[in-house]
Length: 250
Image 1 (cartoon, one colour):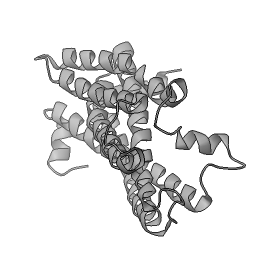
Image 2 (tube, helix red, strand yellow):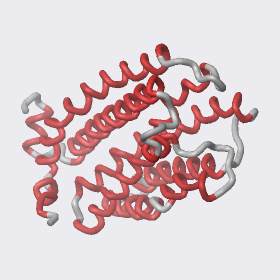
Image 3 (cartoon, one colour):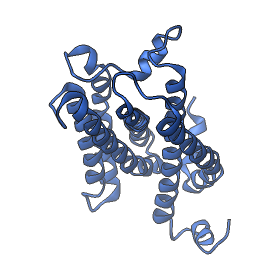
Image 4 (cartoon, helix red, strand yellow):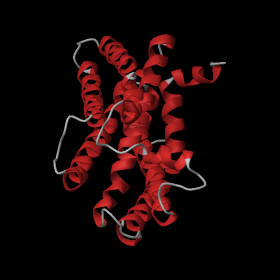
C-alpha cells in the first residue's frame, strides 16, 4: 500500500519531483492570488452591516484555514518520518513549519484588525483566538526543537513528536465556536458547504473568497516545495547529483 513512498526516500527523487511540480503550483497560485485579491478587495460589494471592513476576510479566512491545513500536513510528514524513517519527510517538517507559522500569524493579526471595529477590542481570550495562538506556539516549538540538538536526526524526531501531539489542537480550533460561547463567528467555509442551496455569502463575495482560498493553497505549497528543495540541497550538498545541480546542471 505504501510502496509509492519508497522511491521518495531518496532525496534526489524527491528533489526532481518537486522541480516538476513547482510550476504547477507557483504559476496558478500567483495568478489566482492577483485575481482573488483584486476581485475581493476592489470589486466585491461592501457588506450591508460591516461595510468595507469585512474585506479582510479575503486574507483572514484563507490564512486561518491553511494554517490548520498545513499543520495537519506537517503532522503526517512527522508520522511518515517516525514510522518509515524517511529523511525527506523529516526535512518536510522544517519546510512546512515556517510557512504555517507565518500563516498563523497573519490570521491572528488580520483577526485583530477585523475584531477591533466589530468587537471593540484588538484581543480577547476567546476560545477560537486562544487555540489559534496555541497553534502559533506549536509551529514555533517545532522549529525550535528541530535545531535544538546537535544531532540533526534527534532534533527532527523531537520536532516530529511535538507535531504529532499538537495535531489535537486542530479539531479544538475548528469546533471551538460550537463547543463554547465565543465572540468569533462559526466557520465561513463550513457554512458554505452545509448551506449549498442558500449559502451564507452572496456569490459576488463567495467566489472571490474561494479564489483566495485556492490562491493561498497553491502559493504556500509552492513556497513549501522551494523550501524543501533548499533543505534537500543543504543536506545532500556533498552528493554528486547535488554538486551537479549547484554547478548549474539539471
